[in-house]
Length: 279
Image (cartoon, rainbow, N blue to C red; front, side, top):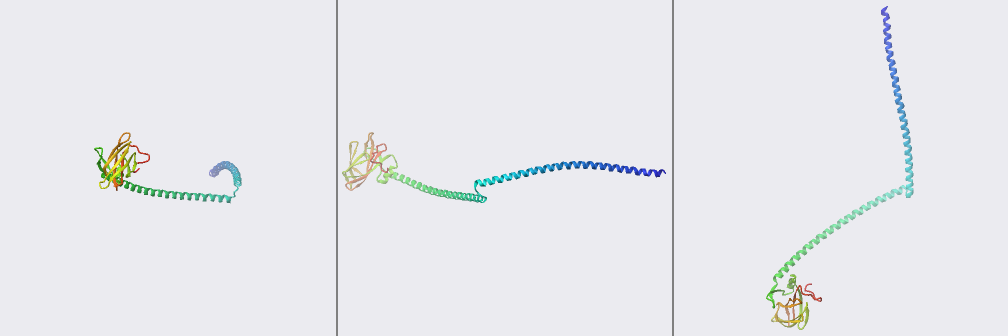
């Protein structure tokens, strides 16, 4: 009888334990459901608030769009242009910009061509200048050579030699020395002719002997150079501060004519009606 009584008690304890576990599980489930419900309620509230914000934003967007349309319409009306006209104006501006760019490129090309042309002209000028320098060097050499060939002859008054020119070319070379003034002349017999600041008169010629007689009028004085030779320096003094003048006759033309030049110091006055030879 004792064994039979113990068995039912064992089953009753297990059942109670199972019931306790189930009860705890049920309570835990209720608590979890309560927590989930609270979270769901919070999320639903946030979702509702978000929907309200979206609605408000959508309303603001519609209002902004409406304002933009009104502004666009007013701008179109103020300009008096349709969309087609606006597109045409835009295309016109684009074409004008392209044309301006083409003109700018053309102007740049023309400028480059002009610069090249100027560079070519400059090269030509440099070449010409080089040729002029060569010619000038040759002329200077010729003058130096001519000067070296000039004859030094003793004057009729001084004991020093004077460098004389025997023809026009030598006279030009002599002028390059720049230390005196020169006046060329041609005299006919019986003619009193002003030369520089003096006057000359041919009195007689002897072509066979290359001799002549010449009167010089200077400072109210008369100097007679009688039976003088061709290319002989005929010297006399003239001026307020007496300076040495020279006359050289280079040629005798028949019985009635001579040609030559008068040489005066640089400090001697120059008459207004005459100028030194070569000036």
